[in-house]
Image (cartoon, rainbow, N blue to C red; front, side):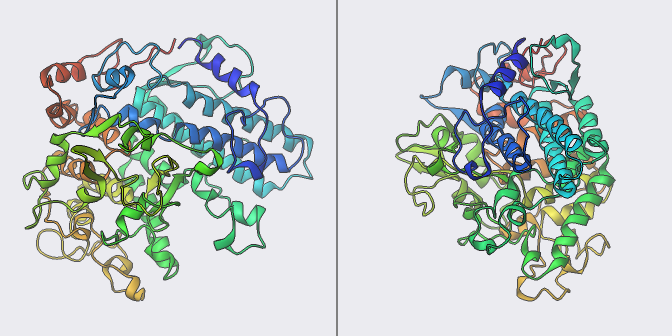
Length: 541
């Protein structure tokens, strides 16, 4: 690991710049070349796409690093030793290809180099450059970099921080190792202070820039904007980690209310109106991300050699290898009324979308059920991966509101919606506009009961006005049911453990799936080299 940055630099120096038209025909060698690659304005765009090819390479990595140690997944008879080591909370992970963070640093190096070259190009061509595009490309690169660093913090608890372009062997001792709290603060600074006087709020439309004369529905560029993390959920999540709950509420509500009020068609986006009849499963089992649920997503095309390994790890049909499976303990939570108030049902309906039993084996099937109409064949491993999806907004908002003491509003988001959730009637808080209550002019596209559990006809989770921690744990329990095998639950556990200094928040949920639960509980509680046991341990220097 002491040579991690040097190895990443070698990767960056090996490749050549990919052209815009090659975005859906990517080869491993299509990475950034640091040697004066921006010579024409068209390369401003293709250089950024080079960063996106690296983002595709790490899209599924966080799932294997966190969900294996979380409350649901367990090994199978096919699981390699590297995954077993992560699953078992081993602290000696030297040489473990899953645990190695080098691909994350590869993205950071590419971002730093690209920002430097953008600046050099603008300096050399002050009248030729399109300043609007320049600012948007800077903003997008800053958001990618901040998201990668936040991911490193959530997984490893620390990261080597550097902002300069690294083009040769460097002494790692010259760069600080920041802990998770320091990473969060640095990411917030990165997004707000920016680069060359440009912050991270500027947006871009690949379709408008590169294909303005084609109808959106026919444009090959229509989904490109998904690939970059949007500013508002990234900033909101960082504020949530930082304890700036009011900022989290403000930025999410501003975005959601603006979307709801925009047009009848757009208003369905970010609304939790998904139903299990032909819609909910399409969040994953579709060739493209579902627009109503999508904020940001990494997309792939197996036809053009763009793949991840989700189907390899979860699928049971050849050539997939069935390396990870849902534990019986995890599956049972979907039918346990004490954990999941079922409201008279015997099974949470989400379970039938997420899991199946094929040939006597429990399988995570959300990314490709056997009845899939989108991916007929098991080798079509181009599942899109959500960086942020609409349902997450409800959970982040509920967590922030709960910690601000707005328990009734938090309950409404998780339970039956603002029209009738807690405990006697609806919510009249002005933060929820008329679009939340069904009194707006959105017509048939308006779903007033926009609570998570209400959408699935489930019973209410109990929220207590005087117990913020218990309410947070209710939100976390609901996350366990909503986001299995997406790399989102275990980091939320860590956030709450750090908030309340209570390791049982992780251990009580994770340890029951193990045959040696007390040993795993001890490993979660153990500090190694000053770092808590719940982080993935990797020696940085």
